[in-house]
Amino acid sequence: MAEVQLPESLKVDDNFGAEIRRLSKEWRTKRESYRTNMPLTDPEEQLVSAATSGDLKRCRALLNRKAAAPDATSAGQTALFAAAAAGKAESVALLLAAGASPSISSTNGATPLHVAAEQSYGKICLALLEGRADPNCRDGRGLTPAALASSNEALWPLFSAAGCERVQQAMPLQSNSPERKGQGTCSSTDGFVPFCTSKMYIYILYGISHMDQQVEKV
Image (cartoon, rainbow, N blue to C red; front, side, top):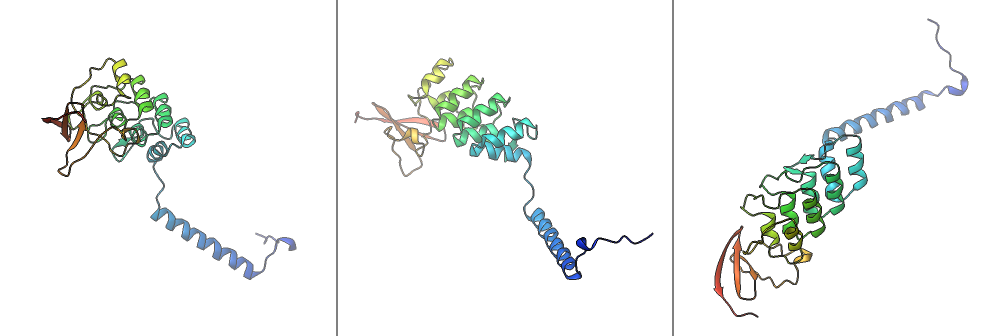
C-alpha cells in the first residue's frame, strides 16, 4: 500500500506530535482517576439530591427523560420525603404531580406528612393532604401526622378539614423550626420537652406523654 503523503500545511514536527501524545495520555490518566475516586451519581440519588436542594430544573430533566422514577430512593428516603424534610414545597408539588406516593415511609416509619407536620411546614402539609397522604398512619414512635399537628394552631385547620380528630396530648416539638418560635416552649435538662398549656405542663419523650402537675397559668 502506498504511503499517504500529507500536505505541507498539515505536517507537524516531531516535538509537536510528542507533546500532543503526552497531553492526551495525561488527560486519560486524570479521567480514569476521577472515575475511580468520584463515581458517577446514580440517577435516583441525583433526583433525591435535586429535590432536597429545590433544583426544579434538574428534577424535571430527570423525570422527563425517565432517568429516575418519582419514588426514587437514596439512603432509605424517597425524594418526596427528602424534599418535605428540607421544606422544599415546590419540589414536593412537582414530585406529587409526577406520581410520587406520599405513603412510602422512611426507615423509621415516618412518612413525608409526619416530617412536614413536625417541622410545621404548612404548604407542604396541604400539598400532601391533597395528594391523599394518610394523616392517621403511625411512625416508629407510634405518632400520627394528625397527632403531631394537634398542638399547632396554624397547622390544625388543614388536618381538621381532612376529617381528623384532634389528639389531646403533647407532641414532640422542633425548637429550631422557625414556625415554632415564640410559642412558649421550654426545655429541661433530663431530655424531656414540655409543651405549656394554660392549665398544665405536659411532658413528652419520644412520643410518650404524661401529665406532671397542675400549675397556674402564667
